[in-house]
Length: 310
Image (cartoon, rainbow, N blue to C red; front, side, top):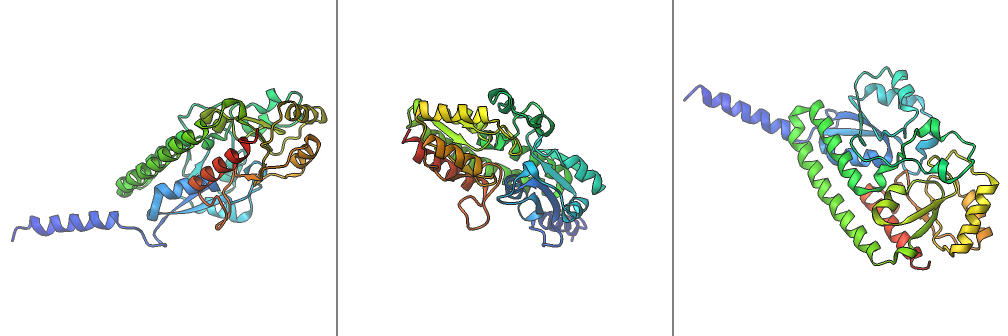
């Protein structure tokens, strides 16, 4: 028998082993900054990685304070994935505290970022959005086309870290891209049935500008792009007048925001809140938005139900 045959069989066996799912102990530890991003990373990485999410479901990344367990998770990670666009103002300090020396992947790299609307549109806000976000609106995941960019950036980063899994990451990524494209087509078709003049919505903070630009929905918010901003009494009064004048009926809380301000606005404007939108975080397991695709479909359904009343 040729000496080359056992060698070729060995190579085939090694290639097969590299393509098989890793055991839990062998999976590559990857940290994602918040729950929505963690879900995207998990879809691309599949069974080859173990994802730890720092800011969990129903939690607010704008006001996140890392705990000792978060420092440990980052110190053990072989890859850290962040949204970027100033969303994780705490990540640099966290990486330093964890003595992390690996790559930090910016999932949003390459997208066409929108400028913040919070400060300019809300006049004399006395808050520190500049400190947290800079000039870019960080909520790019609200447009599925941007999440396609996220997906490919993540797949490329995982392939660089783990070349043996490159083909798996590519296949997982492209399968997920197909689901994102289907989601985007569906959402576009749903909103196309609603006259432009009715597509007006009130939310807690400016998290939906990318969504609004993609599906031609006009979002008005009491706060800027960060939930730790506080609008003035003058701005709140102006928003209430606008709701009354334009007869806007679609008003929503957000799953990770304090509802008190919007409850006040709803009472004074004489509007019944339409329920909850998932803005910066997934729901917990068993909720209506346990993953990104479910989150978007749920939000679209909620918005359409109320927009039709405008």
